[in-house]
Amino acid sequence: PHTAPFSHYDAGISGSAVHIARIPLYQVEAFRLTVPAGNAGLVSQVLGSAGAHEGTMRDLEVRRVEAGWPRWGRDMDESNLSQ
Image (cartoon, rainbow, N blue to C red; front, side, top):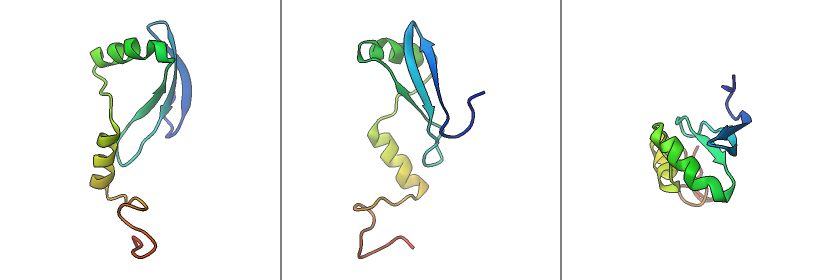
């Protein structure tokens, strides 16, 4: 039911309230979860045992480069625009 890109919804995982946002970036299907800090480890463990992979900023940067999305200040600036 929550399949639209950038849709948001609230859920519960192992008794913890979790806000889930579908964030399809750089041709990768991803979700951003907001969890109370005290429950983050448990939620991460439960999702990991279900096959979820916790991405890092490095993972996101690799996907950005692979997808060909330039980043201002790194890949282009006022002297070399992407077009």
